[in-house]
Image 1 (spheres, one colour):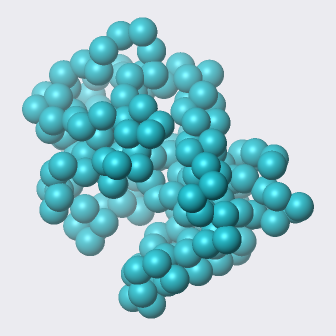
Image 2 (cartoon, helix red, strand yellow):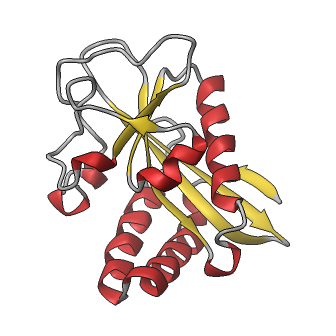
Image 3 (cartoon, rainbow, N blue to C red):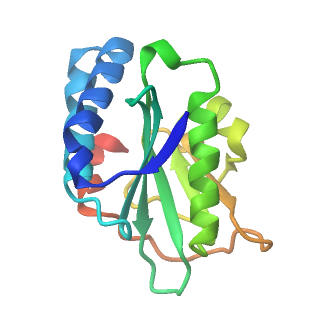
Length: 178
């Protein structure tokens, strides 16, 4: 498997992967919703505010993750991991976990302090995420399932308490994702 930092040129294959994975697992409506989100995010990849990483096998894209910057008034670097897609044929084989670990190491190399995500605690705990109280770091918008908010420190320091609600990239500024 080969890991790559993706860019805007990968928009079509990224969108197709997300649309097919989420349609197969969650239905056509969710496939369209998350496919559109992936399309918007991948059309704006700048490797600063929006980072996209992929796994290739035999030159075929089999997994993709996005990290997007959360902005605070404080000088702390926090990125959110979402969304994640692994092709149906490669699920439950550790491909997603390996790509996430690769991505977290990429963030550490970029001096990022904290990674957060919003998803299934049973899955994300396998790559070091723990439940994160909104008393520590708030989500950008109100959470429909607060137990899904998770984080991990990417430095030697514990996750700091930040009293303000962050600003996320515009693509996530819709309550439907929260």
